[in-house]
Length: 112
Image 1 (tube, rainbow, N blue to C red):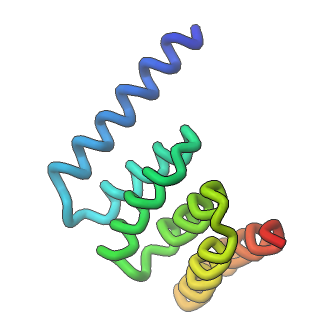
Image 2: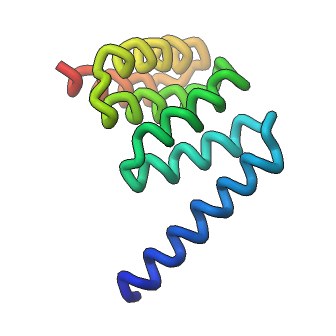
């Protein structure tokens, strides 16, 4: 597939997630999906905003916490990334997600 086609599909997907977050402002998954789409594009400040909303709506959303940590790291805020990823790790362990906790440990070690 052409790069132009891929870019068009990516733009359409991003717009779809923006619309979903607007239509369902109280749905953590909508904001998480939007944040992940921004992360893929390395639009870190936009990703932080969307993912902070997802986490505010569901403080136990471990995947959103991990992605928020990634967004902070990408935005050049390693201290915030460390705080959020530590919280994500604690949440993952509390939810018996040992493999996710290990993945988070790798991210934390990469912040040093």
